[in-house]
Image (cartoon, rainbow, N blue to C red; front, side):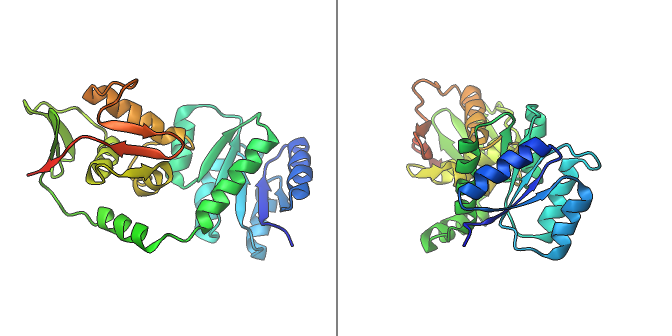
Length: 249
C-alpha cells in the first residue's frame, strides 16, 4: 500500500520521469499530467489524490489559474514546483491557496521532505486546546488598545502607533501577525500556526521564510534589534514569542 497518491502536473518529461522514479521508490503512487487536458482528466476521474505538485508554466495553461481549480475540486494540499524565483509570484501562489513553494532546480530529498511535512500538517488533528485558542483569536472582538514598551496596537484602527500617536505604517498582514503574537504574549506560537491564522490577510513569501520575512519587517518598524530582540523573539526551529509586557486599555 502506498504512502499517498501524488499528482504531478508538469510539462517537463525528464523531470516527470525522475520525480516518478524517486517518489515511487519512496513508497508513493505518482500520477502524471503534462498538460491541461491530462490534468482535467485526473480530476474528472475523481481519483484519490492526496497532494498535488504543480508547475506554474504549462504549454496550454497558466499554473496560477489551476490553483483555484484544484481548491474547488479536491481537498488536497498543493506544492508549487517552479523555476520562477520572483517573490511576488510566490506571494500570489500562497495567497491563492498553495501550501508550499519549491524552486527548480531542487534536490529530491528536499522535495520528499516537504511532501511529508505538508501531508503531515494537512492530516494532523488539532488538539482541543489548540482549537479553542485558535477560535478565540479568530473571534477576537477586542477593539481597544494593547500597550507594550513605547508602542500601542489600536485594534479598532488596525494599526500600530508610538506614544506620540505616530503610525508605524504596518501592512494589514503585519498588523494581524503582531496582534496574534501580542494576544499570545509569553507563549510560543509556531510558524505553522501563524501561517494558518494569517494566510487570508497577509502577504507571504514562501514556506517558513514567509513568517520570518514578516517578522523582520515588523522588527525594523518598531526598532526591535534583530540580533538581540526584546519584543519578538525567535524560538529556533519552532516559531516566535512576544516577550514584552502588555496592557490592554
